Length: 196
Image (cartoon, rainbow, N blue to C red; front, side, top):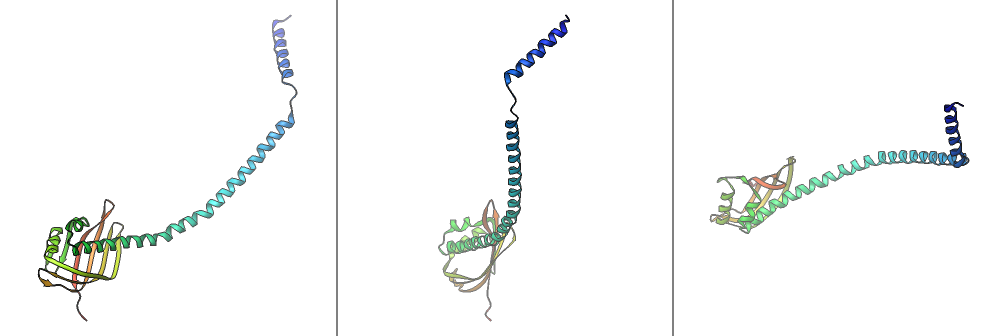
């Protein structure tokens, strides 16, 4: 007898024995598994399509909300700058030199009829004068760039400077820049309004 045939027969017999141990193949279970898998795949496709449609529908809404909130943001920035200007006037009125200095940049300058002043000059004048009261009107704040603001307004004030009465209505302008996330005054000017 040929040893290869015997070995082949033994291998074949072992394979047949393994199949007998497994038992009969149940095609219905495999078919059920395939049906469930196919059903799940169809369900996933539907969910994916619905998700994409929902995404397409909501993206324009989101962008629309971003655009509508920008005017509110601009209004908030305008208010912040106007509040800083009022804080500067309040510090000047109350002769709070340190508080006044914190609102201004180191390279600040003011332009007035009597000359150009830096921060120290402004504080020296604060000590020589008295601002009794003031009020703003016609306030406007514009942003020529995201980190720069120009505020124009009319200020009516009662006060003295170096013993002289400076009461009246003035056209005023201030420039603020944003440095390290903080708005600081870099320029201010006042011109007495002419009577009509």
